[in-house]
Amino acid sequence: MLIIGPPGSGKGTQAARISERLGVVAISTGDIFRDNVKRETPLGVEAKTFMDAGDFVPDSVTNRMVRDRLAADDVQEGFLLDGYPRTASQVAELDDILRENELALDVVLQLTADDEELVRRLLGRAELDGRSDDNEQVIRHRLGLYHDQTAPVVSRYDERGIVTRVDGIGTIDEVTDRVMTALKVAR
Ligand code: ADP
Image (cartoon, rainbow, N blue to C red; front, side, top):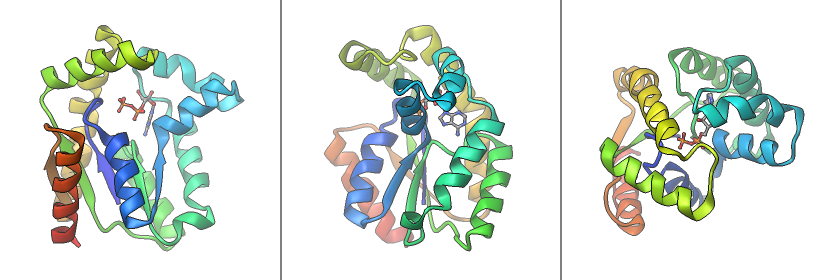
């Protein structure tokens, strides 16, 4: 399954919980990039400038990383992908990767929340863990990219009839309950 939502919608938090409950591995492209930035790997060095500006890391880098990750043994029993695809061309790439690995998507979970709540949450997170892309200007840029490029991605999956929407406003537990209820219906 995929989990898609704007920055600050709680994708990562919910992905960790869903993965535990369903017993499938959670893969977050943002986490993989941040880990590489921290370890100063070539991938991290390449990604950092884009991430700090709130821009997408180029497809040439991101696609290869996802392709490698989805070929690993631990995803063959199921996986939850968080943060990919974010653009129409990544949708096409993911279709290819899944076909090559004889995998298919069951569900695309979209978490929703309004922009002002998202900005509030991300500014709060900035004070707690100081992520270098959580300042107001970069946050608004990331939100703009989400609306322009990633919302259309959801429409593509909507046409396939596999999207389930969940309201991301509320406590973490409330949202998890909504997600689990929605997934049982969707499966
Ligand atoms: P958020 O959803 O809050 O922006 P993420 O952790 O999902 O946080 O992503 C952080 C950053 O990592 C993005 O702003 C982007 O620079 C990079 N990134 C993550 N996933 C992708 C992707 N699929 N394509 C391009 N860049 C990505």
